[in-house]
Length: 287
Image (spheres, rainbow, N blue to C red):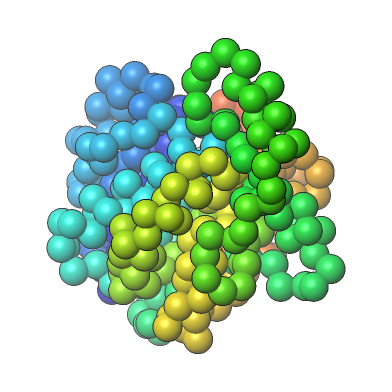
C-alpha cells in the first residue's frame, strides 16, 4: 500500500523533519510544498531524509485565498505526473502529527482499499454551510495585490448579482475538509475536472476559502461518491470559535488518545513540545 504524503508547509523546518521521520515506512514517499513566500534554503536539510522531494511549482499561499487550493492542486498534479504507482495520497500540513505508528496507518488503508477519507458537513441547518455560501456567491479579491482592492470588492458585491455555485451538483464542505486521504484514482479525477473546466477555474479565482469546499464538492458529485467515508481520520478542535483551529497542547493529550483518529492538528513544538513527546512515547512507541 504505497502512500504519497503531500505536506503543505511554511514554517518550522525542525517540526517538519520530525513529522516526516515519524511517518517513515518502506512504502511512503514525501512531497513538500514550501510556501513561495518562504526562503526554501531553511528547509534544504530535509532532502537528506529518505524519499523526500520538494514540489517544484511553489505557490504563494494567502490565508483565505484561492491560492492555498491552487498550491494543493499544483502539488497534486506534480505527484500524479511522476507515475509512482501510489495507491493513496495523504494531504497534511506541516503542523500535523500522527497518532498511530505508520505501519498501522498503512495497514488500515490496505484493509479499506478503495475508500477515500474526507470530512464534510451534512446537516441541513449546518451553520458552516449557511455561512459558506458567500465564498462563491460574492466576489473576493484576496489573492490580488493592488491598492484599494477591498474597496473595489465592496463595490462589486454591491452592484453585481450573486454568483451561482460553479460546480454541477450539491455543495459539500466544512472546516475539516481541507485535509484528506484519498485514492490516487479519486485525486486524479478531481485534477482532471479542474483542468477541463475553464469556467470553474475562473470562478474560483474570485472565491474565498476554496480549500474547504472545492475538492469535497467535486469528489462527492463524482462516480467516486459511494467510495467516500465522511471522516478525514484527523482530530481537529474548533471549539474556541476562532478562524483557526485550537493549538493542541499537553492538556489535550487524553482527548487525542481517545479520539481513534490517525492524525491531529495543529501543533507548534516551539510553544508546546511536550505534547509531541507524549504522543511519541505513548502512541508511536518512540523512546
